[in-house]
Image (cartoon, rainbow, N blue to C red):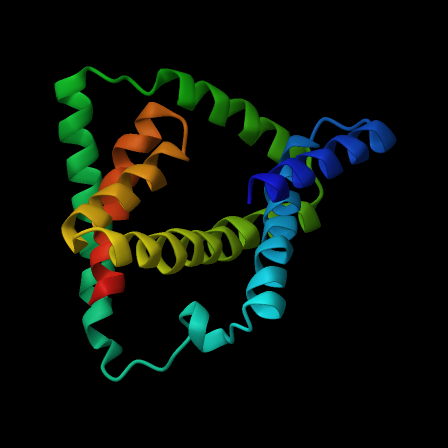
Length: 184
């Protein structure tokens, strides 16, 4: 996955050299997502012979519980991040400044790039995260560790990947909830 992320960023920098536009940073998200999906799917499908069901795409018997469990997971993540952030004195000023410049660049970008970026942000990256952190990582950790420790460790690793401290405070709670939902 690290190789896929580096490859996606390399593709974006290659496009930057050719086009020299201000919205090139928006290409990083879809570029790295699509490269990461291909790099992840190839060994799982061709070397391990995984099917869509092995990755987790199976019919659920009673999916109705997800209608309240998923929003509750997001709400607990927000409340947990706010509480933990307040206790630690974390102020998300840096992240807000970076988002403001990205939003300005997005307004100058073509519509197709905005649609592709949103699709990757809302669909591709969350699917990749679920496969990597819940199916592969949590599955491997739970084979070697007690399930509670495996859930916490997978959530901590999931949060650490998100780099920015304000995001990590939210994502650790979200990771814990997603692990519990996956196990359920």
